[in-house]
Image (cartoon, rainbow, N blue to C red; front, side, top):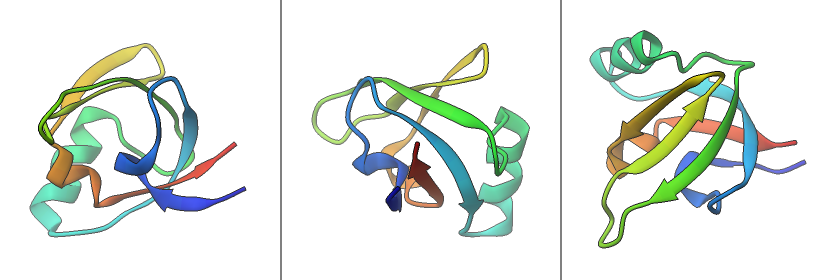
Length: 77
């Protein structure tokens, strides 16, 4: 099992969130979207030119700016 940033996952890969870092306002926004330690996530799509990532958390699908994904540490399961 490898500890890494969310943006380094490939399309189709699943992982478990380990922790959220960054500014408190960013952490609050991510928590409001459903990003919580222990939750399983899957990368559905990556936009080109460092665009947003399309992510599935449980039954919810969200788009997250790539720069915000550096605050989400995951472990591949």
